[in-house]
Length: 313
Figure (cartoon, rainbow, N blue to C red):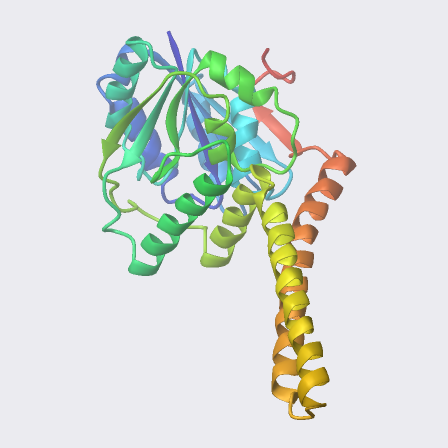
């Protein structure tokens, strides 16, 4: 029985050793072979050196160093591609994903679940704005997309090898891993937990990056925004037609009214705003088509430690 723990890292020199000791010190994991696959996503600190020193003492620690910072999503996908375990568990290195949660997740897997999600039971540690925007994102995404994602669930989950094989067979280059990890389906169970604070270091995600990730998630798994833009355009056209008839009738029966500057400007600005929104939505999808058509690799590997040059089947 082999466990694969997938850990993307970017400038996490303060937390790597703590994470490694937590994994190797867990009583349940000591009973199994556990490979830890670190993906160094272009770190500029001592993260790579720390992992290399650990790997010299532990043959089940593997390191994949990317040539630059490609982002957490490609790094996580890379880890899935190189994992070999019967079950695969993506985790954050900051220990906000509790190691002790792996045992109840594994027990649910033994009972037949192919995917076991780690769901936050509360978000009290987040500030109010982050809680609200997270709630809005999940509601909007699940309203627009056919592929639903569980509320308050991140990348931390247990995946059966069959599920991982389906995910890594997907060819898309624009990655939204929460959606990709949920897309295959299979029997799914949930474990709830309270997320602790970071043990060290600082988060690498800011508000702008989270907003971009939300847009990526919605546009990658739904064409509803395109349809919505069409519906809004259709409704506005009908209303504009009725408004035009009212103006014609008013001109015929009441004469020309030159006092319509305010209403004219309001209508023009409203229609212009609708058009710009529709063009912006269209641009998001065209940009993704452009990126997919170029077919560039999701990531570039600079070096491997403990991994075969060829990706495992």
